[in-house]
Length: 144
Image 1 (tube, rainbow, N blue to C red):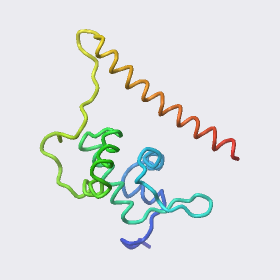
Image 2: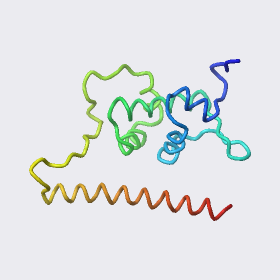
Image 3: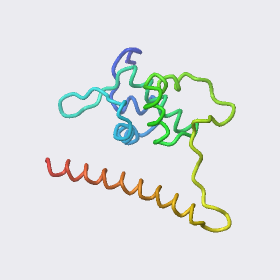
């Protein structure tokens, strides 16, 4: 029996509807404070219809419009969750949006001091995220 459009979705149903693995939804929850599914006893997640719309907006911004995680976070901070949800319904862009961050590419002629500093900043930021994730995992494992 199919669920109605207003029914809550489990994480597996939400992942299937969006076409992404469940771990991606959990990862997005860790990176985007505005993704907050209901959690029942035992930590089971239930996504409301408006959560699915927001997730679809995040997916579209990341996968179709070329935003980075930080770009989506900035968009949320500057324009709010309605803008994120609105991305789910917006028509496909004909050219790259101005808000999208360009991909970081290695220079063709070899690294320059400025490029090295930029790459170092990106790597340090990534290291910080990995250390935070490890600390969270350690905390969860210690609480068992």
